[in-house]
Image 1 (cartoon, rainbow, N blue to C red):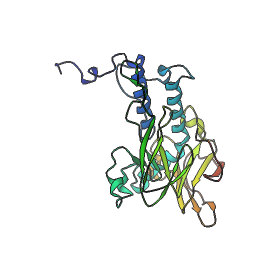
Image 2 (cartoon, rainbow, N blue to C red):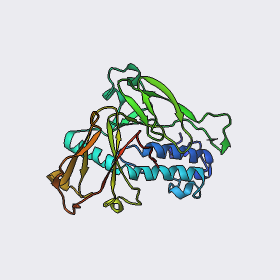
Image 3 (tube, rainbow, N blue to C red):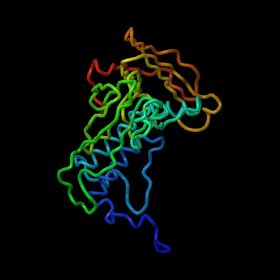
Length: 279
């Protein structure tokens, strides 16, 4: 590299968003980024607003918008994971060896990880539509193999299909899809998608139960800004699923914070009993 020439100017996508290969790469980065603790599109020289990917109804724009909405929908889960980091020294991103230390194959996987303790994320790392220069790729299967760690069953987040662990499955990876699996015995709180976080403050929260064994989750909320949580300004609601009785129980909310809403609508959903949309 010549002195004064930045390394990021020596890439494969000189045309930026005009290159369909770059648009595909950006969408795959965006899908991966939706399952990181901080989700922001940083970079240089190339505009990164979603509308740079094309018009509504085109493949790359729609795929990125789907992930943007899913990130918002998962905010109760994600925010509770962040609260767990503060309260219990939890971790939002977990290598599989944390939870499946006796599964040798899981310990060695470089491209799958847990987001919290319930969701397994499997990023797509190979182009399937275009090379650099907008060159179409032919004969590419838009699938990838995913290993499901043993000792538990797993649900495909998009289809709700249940799989036994300890096996490798081949799953869809079209441009709209990043493979996501949810461990049995999980509770995933979700809400309605908004255009900014404060807009969703009064939206109902849907608690998705992935049955198969008992489950527990603590819903964490605070003022959403500032450092009041460091002084105990937050609330916690324990939620438990009893597999034997097939019952979901909401415990008493503890704590308070400025601007706390007095009531919140909760909607329980049992995955596998009723098919539900993950859009």
